[in-house]
Length: 451
Ligand code: S3P
Image 1 (cartoon, rainbow, N blue to C red):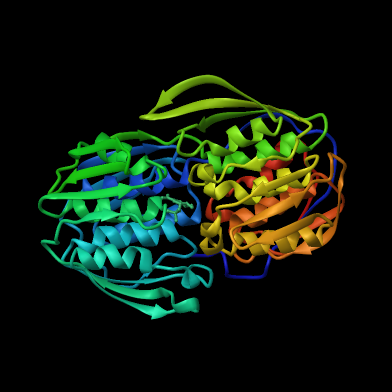
Image 2: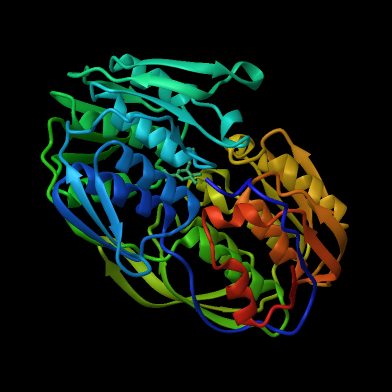
């Protein structure tokens, strides 16, 4: 992985004219990972259109190649994956470098857990501090042997070595933390496990794994009960290759969306954005704050709901953001903090303990950067209270540390668009993990950027 090699690349933005135009955002990161993984487990050739070619997804593709899949790219976004079949993964001969990608790591650990192979996972400084105990616990119950490095606060972290068990032991597991990665790791382990593997999620998380597993022909059922969603997968599955169209990533669309809302006079369209309800929480919250976001041409693409978003500058008002919506917008809080910083009044966001274990501690890093840019905010153990500028330009004039976190870097870049003095992100390289064309897209919309 490349994002920590070479000199840091600072990025500076400050207020300019309104944003206008028509843009697309790259393919959905979650769906792209899953398309490569399931394609690699089908027998035959899966074709993927619109794949996100960010570093995280490329890490997944490299790992699946190292385990026997043949994966090639014809033109931008068009990929072919020749799978090895469920149970057919090969022993990788070198450590799997996951770069910055928690999704690659946790989902691939699930796949390996039920194959008779051993793999070592390594990653960058950010990933190497993230907790892996949440996947180690269920995968060990299924029979995998895992040794992990001791990390901060008693965490089990990378580098980590996992040896799968084949046949593994089917599991009935209730998620102790609302995590689509943990859910997906257990379901992927269940693919090569005799019998039924069941995951119960008391709080719904993104459902791309369930949708795509069903699309590839796995025998999977989902029941919604008082205890939550019960997902049951019959193992020893045979997956059929698919033609997959990856919609635009709502987590990437969040950046131009908030940019247009906060920059006076802006009027933009973001085309082909995934609006899966398990991902669309930010749209609902920004609309509740007074944001003009209109969904156009709602349609279904490859089993996922998609729309074009018409976003216009709006006078935003602070609200208490309902914590129960957090899983449906978990990656969008850094940019929601930015929207709150430009709103009138106070926005309170709680129930966000998970933000502390993302690519960075997103509560602490955002609170620190917002304060440096002249925004009053109060850090809570599980959230942030932001006192907005009332729609005026924010002071800015600070350099903020992105801490190897793509979404922190993009959030402060967007804040700079509504700042009196430039906001500088110390290092924009991490943006390539999820949104390689971010800076050109902002330029296309009319932003003034120094880098
Ligand atoms: C993801 C799930 C979320 C999200 C991450 C991608 C996925 O993580 O933050 O960016 O693709 O399953 P958690 O499962 O840790 O909530």
